Image (cartoon, rainbow over all chains, first blue to last red; front, side):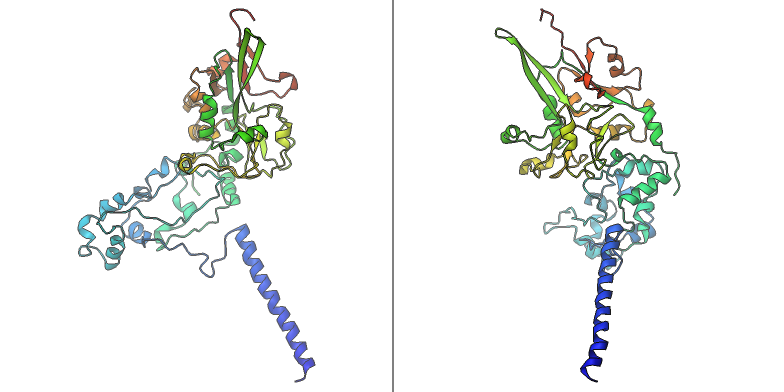
Length: 191
Length: 244
């Protein structure tokens, strides 16, 4: 094989691979910009929380309603994450030594709620759904007008780790508002 | 997606509400409580003295003081000036990106995320009601937690102005009909703070509201009425009882 043949093969090969990489990066950037990043390399996954709280166990297995824990969702701006004290309604003190726990996993996770002195500490949950600061999203009117939690948050009941399922960009919001004859005045959300 | 109740459309709301404010100058003592209330409610940045000297202070409402007459027959006059929410607003047509517009409730709305900072609107406002963020706003560490979470903190390069406390309007009228919102059930921060009740806020479309009744007051006037901006904020003239 002489040099000429090598060049004839290598130049298009390198050119093609460079073009492919550029196309892949371009697709990734544009997709992330217009919608949400493609679910590759862990981009579609939810963040790792300080405590592995499985919604599957609580919602699907135990049958707890969303609003039992996220109490302010029908009256306030934020759905609110419950205080640790509320976790302890069910996970009482007898269970945290691990002996009375339903599973070994649960005992390990529940033990993380306590500091060295044995006092329950608040959990620094990692935020999953974040809107820009110039958006004032209020949960209450959505719940009051019959929008189900799953419409925006997906089937959380079957999520071991909560992740964002909709891109929640402005187009996403406005499309739904138009379909449901909800206000589309800018000052509905931006103020 | 299923909806149980039909949400109100934008047209329903336009017939429902038309927000307005009346300021009685006979009652205004120039105490600036409205200014302080507005600043804390709306996350208005803290202005250094140098900002006032440069003419770059950010104020959604200010109390203008001027003197009438010569000493000893001198009178101090006060007039609180805020965005007049003009029906025919000079700021709106000059915005190249539609960041300011009139909504169906009679409010002149500033959309921060649309604003690109041309400052045309501020230059075209005869009331000097608009302020531009020349700097990134900074609060002292111990004031960070007093920021109102219902109001966006504006960043550098964005125009801002009185919103008639639209966050309070939203909170009080969301998914409600006018019958569910009695007159005086909520007020903007300035109206709420005014110790002499010089300011009145309400729905002009409700004939029984206080602002509607004050429309017939013979002391009523608009600032710069001759400009034809048709402000929604009205003033009641100060009348001296002991001669001018």
